[in-house]
Image 1 (cartoon, rainbow, N blue to C red):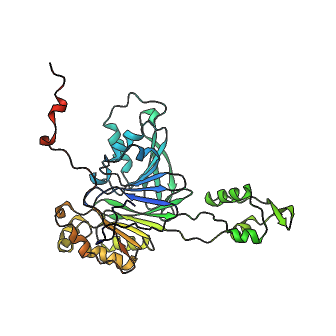
Image 2: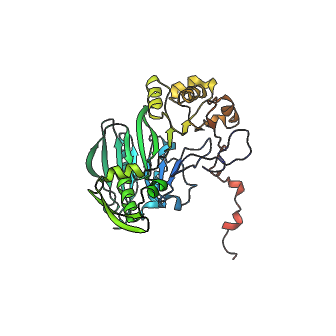
Image 3: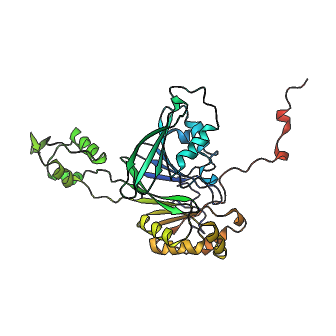
Length: 379
């Protein structure tokens, strides 16, 4: 996380997060459109959660972007998709976009607002996934075909999981916000760590076979029927054949703790939403959750299907995350934002993180422009 994430009342401190492979960065201030970017340390890939106003991100922030997870299509969570397309159009890759039912239509309407008569073969593709309770519908928008929509076979969905790779998995559930709004949970997947002491005790000589076992473990592939390994006996070496490869993997695996992140934006505080949040976010280490209104505006929160501080306090008391980041405060509190942190009451074991009011640059006013720079050459 960036250095601006601090505990309230502390001028500056370095936050030590428990993640082995996930590097989360929240590219927004308290009042800005929410934008969480995850980087996997092992391979440098990026994953974006919501994409509202993101013109402040450098182009290279998009270069390694593999997937975007959109909570809902309100402007402050979706308008930045134009910038994503602009930055990645010539990257020659396929970018996955996940959202609720109807997100493919909205993406198609976005693209149809432009002329694509200059499409090139190296242009990127966008694969849009609409998340339903029992399935995930898939639509492909190929760049070399001017993004003409192509329907792909639907994927069966059993349980909350919607995406995974070698290093993380993403789960989702649909909450109510006057429209469908997805909440997300990101779990680190365990890596295969060799217990060197056990390896030494078994007198096995390290070799390429360790990399093969790691690859099978990470990609959930079947282990080979047998494995030839060099074994050391004193000063002598001999080759042995292991036929219970899965048993060897279990013997050599070093236990490890995996961590998780929860992302909640935006939802109303209904009984059904509350149960979904508590179920999906159980045991998360870092929770990012909208807190749009202060306690006094509970009626406004209910009428607009948002959360207020008392709602968030109730969720925190149940979930007890190790870290909590409140986000997406209403702009009506721009001069009272410190009251948010005063009203939040996280459990003793939860570290409350704090954001600056805004990270996005303030727009220039007409009277701040030096017009001499634009007057052209003297005649």
